[in-house]
Amino acid sequence: MPFSLKNHVALVTGSTKGLGKQIAITLGKSGAKVCLNYANNREKAEASFSEFLEARCEGILVRSDVTDFNQIQSMVREVEESLGEIDILVVNATPDQPQKPIEEYDLDFYQSMMDFFIKSPFLLTKAVVAGMKRKKWGRIINIGSEVFQTCVPNFSAYVAAKGGQVGWTRSMATELAPFGITVNIIAPAWIPVERHEKDPQEMKDEYLAGIPAGRWGVPKDVADAVLYFASEEASFVSGQTLCVNGAHTPW
Image 1 (cartoon, rainbow, N blue to C red):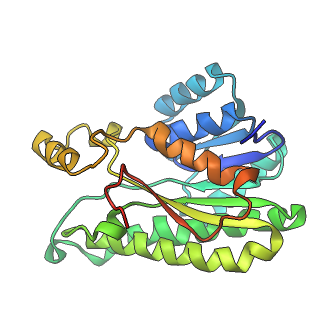
Image 2 (cartoon, rainbow, N blue to C red):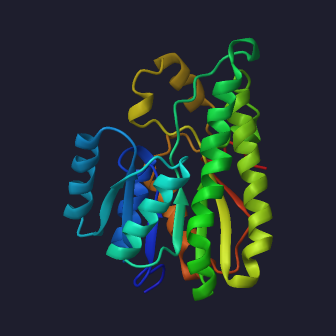
């Protein structure tokens, strides 16, 4: 079967809501054993995990702050004991991203962006890459954002961190290619999920009008792209940024 992930183990960070939940379910339906990760709101996380199991997927639910080294190490050990060695890593967890002019940002907020999009991929990869190297097979997939391509104003902290994530992805792709490990990044459009519920309607209307495909993206669009990068069929694709945004950035 094409795009089968049978006999593979995936860790998807920030995977009990939004894009992450759909990614976890899609990988699970394709045969991977999946660790769903969350940091807050256990009740909602357990509801999402029930949905994952109802889709006839196999996996576990683990609470962990993916910017904390010790918590990451503990989570990886739990996954290995329950499911096996992780060979698919999807770095998806994200904090809130308020848009502000430069004068209103502070250094702590800038640092929080770097923690999620530079520090977290680094720590997570450090925790799992030895197993991938032993297997001579691995997939590291960062969930980025089109904001790096579109240069969104009043968003410098997030855009800068996402740009760093692209650079990290490219460097790691060349470093890990000899070991059969691919490293790629998916840059989605603005896809309204739970955390966008209070965004102004006029802002949404303006954005939608600029999408050549004429529709909103949905979480499955991103999850299907992750499935491709995770699959054997993408074994010769690495260091790439895939924009999933209906031709919003056709360059």
